[in-house]
Length: 485
Image (cartoon, rainbow, N blue to C red):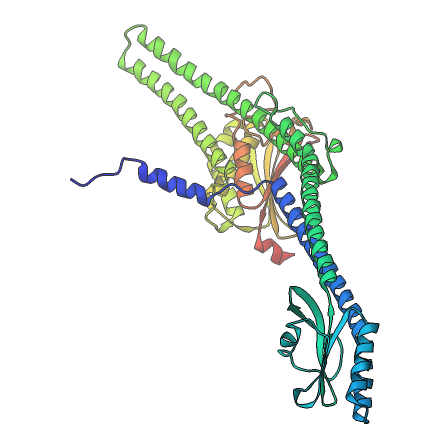
């Protein structure tokens, strides 16, 4: 039977491989320290190399300066020999040249390689013959040779028909350069180490405000949302981060408060129908009743169920709107036609309350979801009819706005709403009356739904209340309004 791999082993290995691929990024301190270390080391290496090259070029120029007088003297001597000077006299002049320049060695070969004079160390001539002869003594003609355990810098010159090998000992120069190179490398390593240490200490000290901010952030919890950071006590580079953090905490605090209020409102709104259902059921079960009595109790319970179902549907709609899950199916919607249809729907209720309905303004079409816009208009109209006294008129106005917007205003007479309440009217479960008494006005979600629908269409809502008139308006994008302006 083939061996089977334990369950989860492959997943663990895949996770391990995935963990290696998703390796944690290096810390900021390590990155900055590494970059400073690399930059500092490269700077020191380039500086050491440039210093070494400069000193070596200086020594080469110095050696060239000592070889040139010898080459000039040899050139003159060879010219005199060509004019008839004897070989013995020529060799004496060569010997005199050697005595005047103790550190210089040379070898003179006449035509066809005849040796005229040789004052070079053993083996140097053989090394020099490997180089091509030059007619001019300059930096390009110089070479470095090793012979007999010593080093020389020299040149092979062609003077008339003679070959001259010139060399000067450079052991001292090379020892000095080797010592300098060791010193430079040691100094460079020490300076790089000190630079890296200084960079690490600097980064650590520079990150101290970030660590303090992190410590302060860890104090934040659902019970301590009042924690704030002082932007004036952090470096200027972190001031924007601190301001953003404080703003985030402010938004979170408001969200927590709003969530707490919503939870309390939901509990309050559901408590009443549940209490009614329980009470009616207990009463129904307290004694035997007729079928008609049971039917009335069931109808009453059905009304409570429908109220809770409507409230739950509204809360689900608002939850989708909060997460941008509402996607309107756009089509051309005639706002005037929709208002007239709703007037027919609300006509019986409005007549019962002694309220008149009137539409004013021009015909306007907007791109939108017909069902959603009809729901928003229905909420505004029902809210206006509910708060209009008998004999009053609910007026709907349609007008085109500049910048490509269509405006719909629902206006009704009634007591002015205090200005302090106006900004919160479109919040869910909000009521001007803090007593939370129903009195048939609904769950307090209608205006919040209006706001969600209009904002989903790219529009805006607002309210004003003064001089006995309350106006709710909503503005929607409209290509037709743009064409008219």
